[in-house]
Image 1 (cartoon, one colour):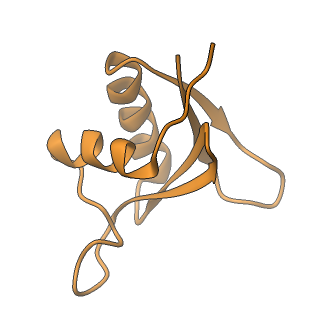
Image 2 (cartoon, rainbow, N blue to C red):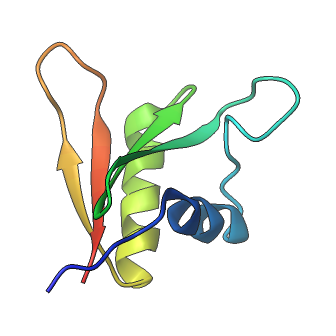
Length: 86
């Protein structure tokens, strides 16, 4: 059964492994950005160059941490990851 997951948990997992956030700084810089889509779903983007490569790296790391990660590429929108927890 899926359980609730806070956005900060995904942010902490990524930053603890050397992937900076693009939103938790005084000025903009490339990095990840998370959004709480629902109590059980996080959406994750990479702001900056090499978007696909970074999303792939995030997916591998989050899967190793026990998250369920699905790549989403909606038409007309930027690619992103949908993250849930077991």
